[in-house]
Length: 156
Image (cartoon, rainbow, N blue to C red; front, side, top):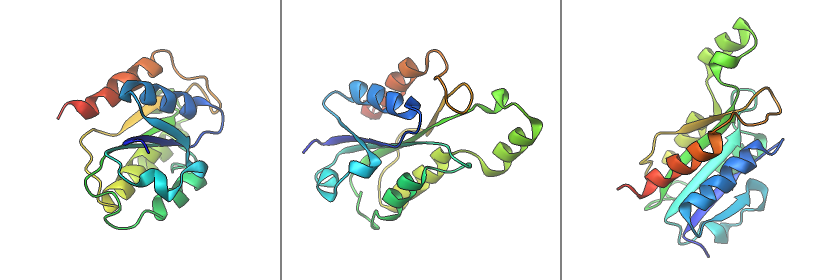
């Protein structure tokens, strides 16, 4: 088992690309779709990244199930980080969507809260990676930004 795991869900491939970039930045990390993660994958972990597309201002349904099934203190001693893909607020097509983003926010905060509740240490700020429109593609430079952000987990 790897001591580093990147868990993601993806609908149009954008979050998967970010997850793969994070995996590269971490070195020998295992990168798995959330529906394929087993309890054994969580054993002996030192570093965990969890990401999801923002869907209705929340993580994807599969990601919510994964997070809900993490027991209290399951992630004690694990450094974890939360990320999502999203339409940036300044690129939202309507004032109503911007209002809703202000009201409900993005998936990253909900992921981070669940990781913290499971006992993980969160040394990095959450990250959101921009997508052009609902299906993408990713905004230019986001893959490099993901690698740089993920490398920060080693800064401590």
